[in-house]
Image (cartoon, rainbow, N blue to C red):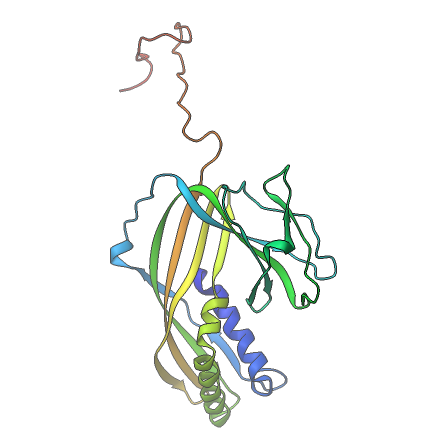
Length: 259
């Protein structure tokens, strides 16, 4: 369920908020998920990382509506070029800030402050979503997933009702689910940026009187990158063998090193 965890959480939250009488409280219906299985797109199953160059980076920075100014710091040094800063809500909604609302530190390219415009609504937003350029080597992968959503009710009638209304909620909010199910992780100079490209309702089943199952087919596009540091591209320094001085032009093979 690794790459669809955000989608699962979004579906669970959506059902509880849209159908509270069915999915919250005593005797509520339950939404659970099967183990996610996936295949990589055969055209992208053997990706080759490109040469280092400008790539998109994304940071999710904690935001306090009561103290919006910051300052804030990007996790990586930005590449010269435009930067886009958005307010991000818990539901995944993005609202762009104007250029005049973001003040970049001239002494530190990765640091900035927020100066909200008059009338800017900040409540309900808990992150800043920042898109900017970095120098990185990257590639893309597509994965095709199958995921089963199981609705369990207290009895057959409640299970049927919860399933039918859940289907209505999911179908009518499919595009919002796709947007809110994107994810981004970074660590150790590497990053993975996932986007749901498609969300299809494939099939259903009734494994038991109080259970209904909906099979979802999901296509995820992954952008995988390795950020290029300041020392990338430097020539590797020679390590002299015992008995040889640094700077020697002669290449030797030490007898203790097996060939």
